[in-house]
Image (cartoon, rainbow over all chains, first blue to last red; front, side, top):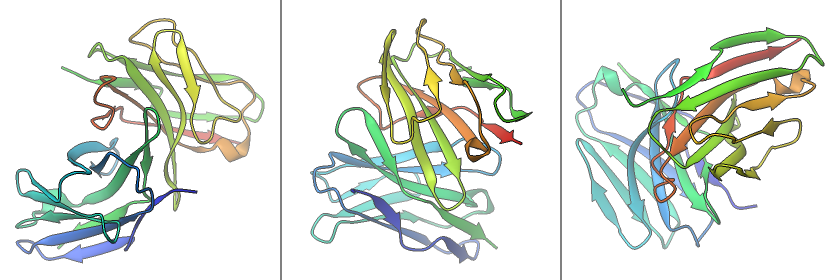
Length: 110
Length: 113
């Protein structure tokens, strides 16, 4: 079936470096894609979303890139800080009112 | 403070003993949903609700029931829990026109022995 998947289950970066978390999706009909952050012991928290008619969207220290040709989504975090350590999920909307989540990438900032 | 409140935070039970996990939101959201999170499997949707008295199955509804009698509450019911329902459960809510921006509760860690 349709799914989203993250390329790497874990990612380790040094404080101050930029982080890039990648995600592949398979559903060409998705209208939007979303990134969530889950800190230890907490529920996921919305970070940023991007509509399928966009290539790039920027937030505060985060940028999401969407490449529909290769069905690839990435989250870039500038000047990574210890507080960015968390599990990051990409998600896509499905038919109706549901989100399909990927399995998550654990980001460790050292 | 805008929040989604789940109770209990931790629950240990035995096979077959009915239980209910409560979920309440104070943001007047129409949309509410339950997810379970398992290692290596990510978040999987159990049930969701578009509004009062409207519920639909998600990806893994077997063994679960829900009800939506009031807008703010969306309890998850396990009539006869089994060990394979041991998991971390999250309730979430959003405006019906902004399902991408889900607000999640802090989770309920359930262990079924």
